[in-house]
Length: 254
Image (cartoon, rainbow, N blue to C red; front, side):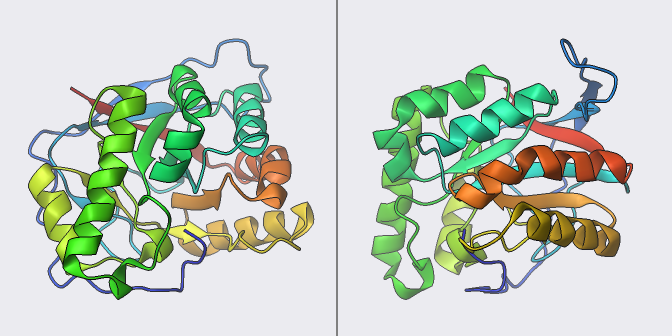
């Protein structure tokens, strides 16, 4: 994903999904982190294979997420140097996130992808090579999804539980295919437009602060493949902490 405003296609009906199973949550202990660390307040468990689409920019809010709670998500990785830098910053704060990975990067940087889940984070998919899916034929869209799912399966040995559209450009063809496969679609509640290479840490922190003030929490979009973002993560986590937000980790059971 490189821009919240680009490629938005409104998917007609609201997802009837509130998951066939009840969303469960459990506290997460912040081992090895000091009292000033952000930490992860709890884990929100979703049932694999139940599908759904969440994120108030395009869909209903994530069920079970309360006001004042945030979910960290990162798009476009994994990539050398930058994704490990993000992981190091998250580890220092005992913070858990969800990474939406492209199939091409999964095929090229599988060991980094494995580190993501080995350190307790969640992983989903984000197309194979980040195309504007709405410009492709139905067959090409489905082919991209198939290749991406196969790349995820090669690395992790299980099907991908979640998907985020590149550019948030949802298409009816893929929404139907993902629903059929029971894959959860993740949109966003807020972002910091962090794909611009000239951004500074101060600029990104200010954007995050203002977005939190406006939205009051929710699913946050960032990009682990963007150098300014990777460098800014320690500061951005402090912004979340200082403003009194609680971090929730979304994970899949089953």
